[in-house]
Amino acid sequence: MKTLTPPLIRFALVAVGCTAGFRVALSSLLTQGHFNFVVPVAILFGLVMFLAGRYFGRRDNEYLPIYDVGFRFHLVTFLQYHIVSYGWYWFGFPSVHEHIGALNATLIIWGICLAVHAYYYVQARRHTIKHINRDELFD
Image (cartoon, rainbow, N blue to C red; front, side):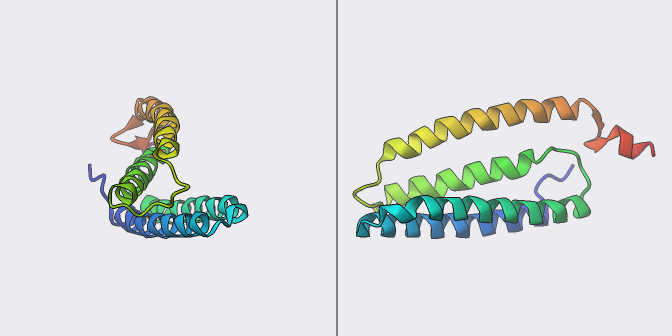
């Protein structure tokens, strides 16, 4: 079963670009002391990521109609966000107001949410035949 589909790869590239843009915007706002704009930028980032995932997820379903409850997109988002964000720290780009502890907390909380999603993904796979929902297979 092919799991790295072209729509998933395109989503990953868009997500890396959005995350890099978010890190630049966040660090710039914090460095300049515009703390009131941090939350709206974070909400906008989350909304853009959701809409990109929704768009490419629908394209992915047209390309390869497998039943995976969005887990592959969630995993790709988790991995790319943390790789870009930790890279941002390792290369010395963060603002003096950004602390690695916030990113570590995000990693832990999001990791727990991803583990719960993985559990539901495994449960959903038990009710499919070769990743295709049984109800859709026998219509």
